[in-house]
Length: 498
Ligand code: GLY
Ligand code: MN
Ligand code: MN
Image (tube, rainbow, N blue to C red; front, side):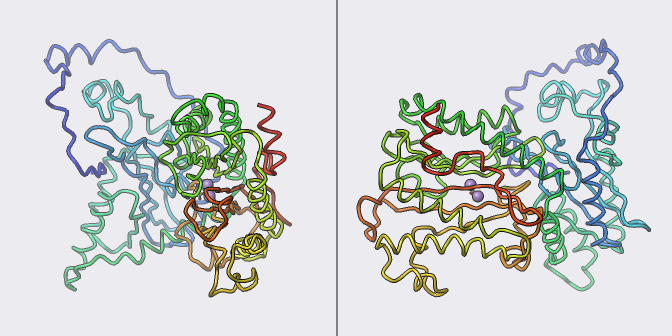
């Protein structure tokens, strides 16, 4: 029911799984007893319970369905690496070891909600799943945890995935309890709920499902994550530390990187090796953008050479097993030393980043961070004679000449998603007040396209971004990634020390 597959998986023509009764009988016996589980509640469990209580208070009497989502098909019978939906992760505390297709349901009760985590538990040796099902069988993808183990780990009531059917069957029979779902997490479940809604509404001849209330749920789930709790802040520190190691690894590997025709791929490989070794994976596709590729904001093809004399912009973040991710950019001179013009651009970006960081404290508006960086970007580009108007004129709301060289924003929230809290309302995000416990990026840049006739030739093909991860404290801010060299001098020193 939750498989959500959109293309067939053709494997029958090469299946060699033995199916004789003799074999079935033989393989079902001769297995040792499994020791009883000794897991204990994970530290995240209490935090996840608090988060569920906050959500419960927002939706009295409403049934809430929060799917982890199915595995996503890549091609034929191969899937993308599994990633549970972030709202599910936030409210269960389950991360990289989530069983695909799991569903958290908050059922309204007299004193709030009762939470139940439904998932497909491991099949016993009395079924043939364990050896004959390549998608989920233990011999193929490893053992799945028992309901009891997960209940202990996460401090949550658990039930087999089959019994989530009862929730949906009940819906079809009785629409009296409003039921909302995270629509994007599991298409098959969402379709099923929409079907039940249409049946309930047929008397009024409704043809479209009204998703307004689901969208409100998505919004609230996003807004709940704007301020991080102590567990989340500790995870962000760990993600940044692992990311720092990944950057160190890249610098250590630079000789091989420069020697390879597709050095950018080696940068990606080196960083991603660290992400897999110390975390779950990368929080987004690594950008390894050497020379003019740095002017392509989301350059992830990473198939170019890394050439001494050029800069290389590396935007990468380790995502931990808990799914919290860093998002850090450093721009390095491949030879170890900036040229005069590279340094000029680099230090301008660094000044913009410092100016933005300097104003961060509780009570400012989030968008002021961007404005502070733009003051510097406009001033520098004007000083270099790149703008047709003064910096002040360029900064006017209806102008923005300097934005030609930095078309992206300066900051976004960061956490379980690299662009965290994406469905939060503008009044709580861009126009919102900064609060202690928020974590966001500061990432100004300057990108001079190789064919930009508005800039002198010496600037063309230079792209610089510096991206840090900022924690708002009670009276100011902490740059969580300050330990990764930032100034031009520090960067050169870092590279000399490799
Ligand atoms: N790495 C994507 C971003 O910086 O927003
Ligand atoms: Mn970012
Ligand atoms: Mn980034």
